[in-house]
Structure formats: structure tokens, C-alpha cells
Image 1 (cartoon, rainbow, N blue to C red):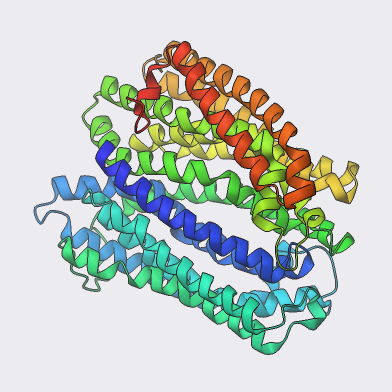
Image 2: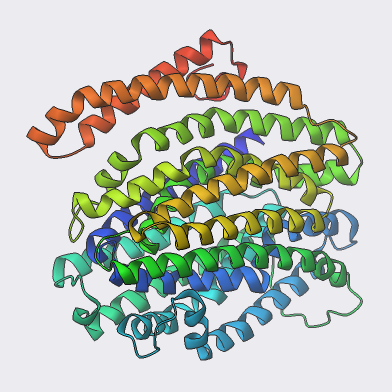
Length: 529
């Protein structure tokens, strides 16, 4: 599992690293104001609709089903896989066509209550028509990836997104280098719209098609099969029903936040306080989760599914406990880093091109507000996989509903009570609070499912040590960064030295403190054995 996780982590580092470069160039090209929000809002819709149509089921339900089919079916699950891939691609093909046709109605859900003749609304719809075909290619990528995961082949799915990022890096490089990048909606040209829309979808298509040679090498041969009745797919569809409701709960909360954040953009169109800043901050915030937690879980889920099927609760409990503790070694200090250095991080990454330091600062404050929420977000994500190993999708739905309800209630309060400059920052903090409550509820329910034991005492002891070490490191890192801030800003005009000095101090102090506290999980980090 650790070898597979390391391979995936390396692929994810490459993917997220190139993705970070792409995002920096995107911010330089489009800025963080209303123009950028039209593109980013349209670009989030395909993934949302893909997840709603079938993506949630693929990511959490179908790997256990594929593992079971390979173990129990006489043909090694080959026919089941072919039927499943045919079903997924058929649903997504129809869904993609319907989504492109209904683009204005879909965009209206994500944007404030403005006339459909408003320039921002019209541009978002134009982008959406170019970007919505991504739905099908997301599905192709993820269903082939799950076929590989069921065969314990994890690397390709983590590495191929690099191709998409390379395409987008080239696109934004051309956009910045050869074209005059506008900072107002009214100034963008048809050629710029076509470049952004067509190339963005092309990158996702390349990412999906690139997995075909890998699944062929793993022994999968696709043959369209529409004989779905009486073949066991009903069980998968029944399990996916609750996952669909889970996705609906998450999408409802995300849609409300997107709507409110776009409203802030409408009120302050060039201040960078709305949806684009929120999405940039959330993407940076989720990097440690994507690199560490997702890699561990992807490698662990087939093994957990086998343990649950064999009723080996001790093995399942031990796997969950270990992955929680090992991932915490990275997640906890990363959360404190974002809390301490959010503004400097945002300015370093986004204060280029059409974005100045003042326009990047709101994204930094949102990153701080997300900050500590990384700990419950990551832990809750891991614990849900315990339910999925039992093929229980109902309980995760109720957890998602509770989290979404808290998030929507708090986000609404921020939208109504806070000024536009701070309302979306408050929504980021609301996200943190919602997942803190969700983690507590998820842990209590999973403990009951695992015969009243979740290795809670050991987990609390480990996370207590990690939190104490990270908090101490954060305070000392902030002091060092504060001492360097004057020179960095006045002489070099960049937060890079400040961030480097503070971050290095944090890393050294965290490692020393964790060793003093005898945090055994620290040995899981390379070079610290």
C-alpha cells in the first residue's frame, strides 16, 4: 500500500505542481475579478454535472463492486467491466448533449439574480457551451481509472492530469504573451474566448484518452455491451442512489456559495473578493489533501473492501487508524501554515500580470479562513471510506446533508450580515466549521459500525502532539517572517523571502517539537526514519 501510495503521491505532486503553475498563469491572464469569475464559474459546471450524473458513484461505490466482480465472477469480472463502462459512457454522452442545450438555465443557477442580457451572464453562457463537453471526458477518465484501480494499478490515473495542465499552461502562456489580456468583460475578444474555451476542453479530452493504452496494457478490452438486465448492475445502481443524494447535498452547498460569491463579484467587480478568489484559495488549501490523503485512500480502498467483505474488522480498523495518523503528519502542519501565511502565499502566487498585491490579498485571507479546516476535512474524507468499504452509502449521505446544511446556513449569514469585502472570507470560515461538526458525527457513527472501537485514544494522542508541534512552529515561523517582512517588502518587493524564512522555521521547529513529543508517525516522512 505504501509503495502504491508513494507512486500516486509522486504523480499527484507532478499534477498539482503543474496545476499550480497553470493557476498562477491563469490569474496573471484573467485576474481575480468578475472577468475571471465568468470563466471559472463556467469551468466548474462540467465537473459538478459529471459528479451529479455518475461521478460520485464511480469514486466511492464502484471500486468495491469491481473488486468483488473480479473475485467472484467466472470470467474475472471482464463482462461486468464492459457493461459498466458502456453504461457510464452512455449516460454521460446523453447528459453532455442535454447540458450543452440547457447551458443558460444551468448558468443561471450559479450566478446572481441579474438579467440574462447582463454581459457577465452572457459571457459565462458562452464559456459554458465550450466547456460542458468536458463532462463526457471526465467520465472517460474516471471510469478507466477505476478499472485500473480495481487491478491495483494506481499510477497512470495520477500522472495523466499532467497532460491537461501542460496544455493549459501553454494556452495561458500564449494568452499572456501574444494577446492583450483584458481586465474587463467588455474588452475580451471572440478569439480570446475561443482560445480559452476550446483549449480548456481539449486538455480534459487528452487526459481521458491518455488512459486507454494503460487499461489495454492491464488486460481490459472494451466491447460495447448493452445487455445490462440481470447482470448484477442493479446492485451497483442501488448503491449509487445514495451516493447521488450525497453528491446533491454537496452540490447544493457549493451552488449556494458560488451564487453568493458571484454576488460579491458583481458588487466589487475588480476587487478580487468573490468566487475566483474563493476557488483559488480552496485549490491551494486542498493541495496537501490531494497529494497525501487521496493517494493513501486510493491505494487503501480495495484492501479495505476486501477486509470488510471478509468481516475482518480489526484489519479495517487498523488500516483506518494508520492512514489517519500518517496523513496527519503532513495535514496538521500544512493547516497551520495556511493559517499563518495565507496572505503571503496568495501574493506570491497570484500578484502577477493583471493582479496586484492588493487584489491578491482577499484570496490570502480566504486561505487563512480555510486553514485549520484542512484537518477535519481530511479526516472526515478518510473516515467516510470506512462506510464505503462496507458498501454503505446511506450514512455518508446523511453526513453530507448535515455538513451542507451547516455550511449553507453559515454562508447565508455571511452573505446577509457581512460587507462584500469580507462576506466570502466568512464563507471560507463557515466551510471549516461545517467540516468540524461533520467529523465529530462521522467518527461517532463509524465507531458504532466497528463494534464500538475506532482506536480513538491513540488517534487523539497523535493529533494532540501534532497540533502542539504545529502551533509552536507556526508562532515561531510568524515571528521570523515578521522580522524579515520589512526588508522583503521595501527592498525586494516580493513576499518570497518572508515566506521562505517563515516556512523553513516552521518546518524545522515542527520536526524538532514532534521528536521531543515522541511522535512515532514522524518516521513516515522520507528522510526522517
